[in-house]
Length: 116
Image (cartoon, rainbow, N blue to C red; front, side, top):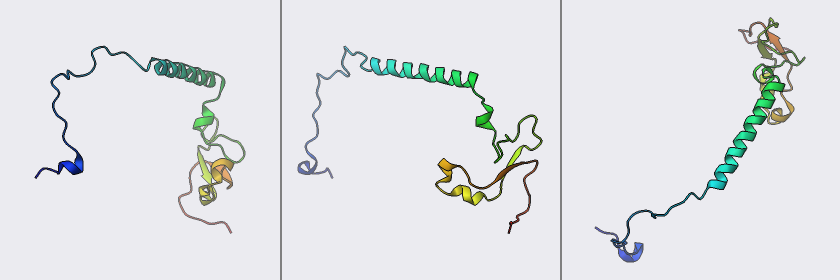
């Protein structure tokens, strides 16, 4: 059963003169492409400058409450231990940092304990 024409309109008729997309086409987004390439070049320059003049370990290694980087070559304690990890789940911990004390430890504790 075909749908009623008054509800959906009449179907389009076949056009024999239609021969596909326009024959004379041109690129319309050259300016956007150039802006994107310039953006990528600037971004690569900033990344190169940051990598040469910065310290990539600051992004990769965790830092305890005393400013020590856990897991550096001269550190014996590679793991970071949070005393109360539940305080880090609060929304303000995202911009203020986790308020619980953190220390570098050689091995994470295996049993559950609570400080009174």
